[in-house]
Image 1 (cartoon, each protein chain N blue to C red):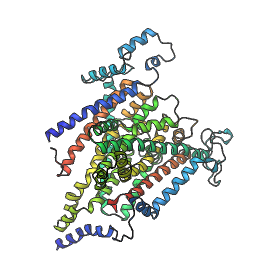
Image 2: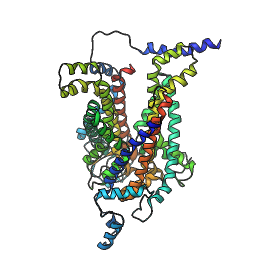
Image 3: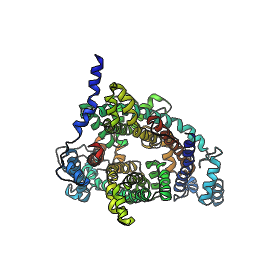
Length: 314
Length: 308
């Protein structure tokens, strides 16, 4: 009876639905935000990534707490490329020395600041710029939407790395802020699209019509009614993108067109370590490992937040 | 259908001009004079500089330069680089290499990404699913240049399977490792996207209906579930083809592949305006055509979508 067994196996597809769906036990009504928070606190992935990010932010704000070694002091007596001494925790030679006799551990610690600042500033920039344009395009529609959408189309045609290379070439002295500028200038359209789509869905809801009927002004409707209900997808995309921006900054610095000495960046260190990758792989391993760990933390956080905010996945 | 395609093509025109104008302005408004730089340390004769600038149209205001460039472009002339070589020549050398590299990466990410995504999407919570999730997470979080060095160290230095850098960029077998590295990030995205999409659609009413009708499991998965789940994946893959070609800068640099990424990187650093604009223009066209194809594919995947 092949027919019956076939039915039985196919039967477990809808069975999953009942298994996954939470039992309808609503003690008290919670807003989407507090509901998500309630979910998040119980998730180990969220807790781990949040702690990692917290640690990173502390390192970025006060690197002196973690090492007393000057990351720029090159001492050639430590001949260059001294192997790491894994026993000496938090000391200058923990991760070894780089080509110029500088402590890799200190450089890894001080390098966090550039990455965190670029990541947070770019994300804030694109979220504000993209959020506003997306809200305008989605809510008003018509010619405003046409113009904004065409502009986002234009920017989408330019690959992020390529555009950033061209923009950054215009700066003779590149600081953290030139990198932030280039990435915001090229990245805001992504948020515009997300926000626009989200606002279009929300603006058809009954509560918007109700607010209009009660005589609420456009600003009030936009900021009190539409924004809080449309922001969730933007937060998710922004969190995941933050890790991506950190990786992009490192890539640009690695290519020699992002941050420059004396700014300390993992990308720059990886670039100088690649020349000695055969003899001293550790010089590449530690900054690269920290960079990957940072990106990983933000992506995990974004994943957890999405799972909590997306009612479709419940 | 026909009128839809026409409308989409018409919509592409302003985007094409907008993007090329944007990159044109960005490249040509860079500070620094590429013509004087051509002379190196020698003092440039102002008359010679002026004459070179005149031949390259650099003495005109930027909008005139752009119109002139576009006029030539539509006659198939991509201009001449500052070294005197036609840009179309440079591109004819480099593009075949990058197209091969990108296509190999594309096939790799599509086949393996879809397979992993379907596997983990159908068996949510299984060991395979967890493994796929962890693996893709690791791949996403390791920047591509680090991944390239890891691959180089493991497969070339330690195992000795391949040479660390590509010797002959036209040899397909040598491009396998760079293509794998290039496609790995997108592979992870494809796998996760497929997994999420399948997970959402598994609970859809039409799947329950199909099950209730007593359709065999294989039919349900291939006809109902996959077709509907593939829409976001196809969108991603479509825009990714262009991104793979433009994003090969890092991979091509590390593996010494003589494709457009390498040429472009050098051209940007040397402020070689004509070369940069020419290559980016072609990349923009690739991107636009790919996104048009994606839109047309929607109708194939989802019969509800009709192009009026």
